[in-house]
Length: 126
Image (cartoon, rainbow, N blue to C red; front, side, top):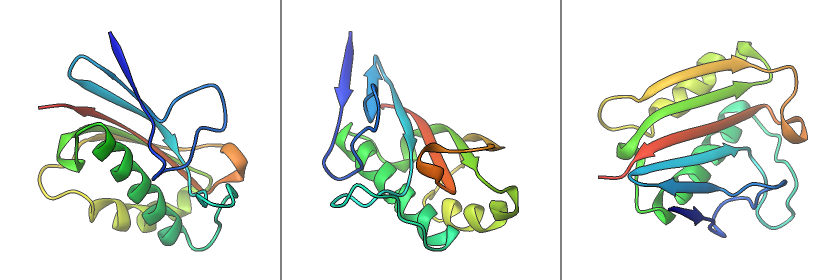
């Protein structure tokens, strides 16, 4: 059985998917971008600010599913420009207190709404 997670504290899906799905003790969070919750428009400021916004939204989704960043075991980061790797890493690292999760970072030709960064995570509920 699966449980659907959606919270008003993160951007609503822009397609036929949910913010997250829980199956058993696993939580799968969809890719999240820096969208303003009110206007539903992409926020393009600095890569650090955009990454912080994405990480805050992921935190809200994790919380809605009963988790924190301590539960995250895998993340995938999509970048529009790999030159932003070091800046994204700086912000990303600040959200983890203990061991870092496994991760893949990929430069994509184009992200939804022409975002600069998109991040998805997988968590284990314990």
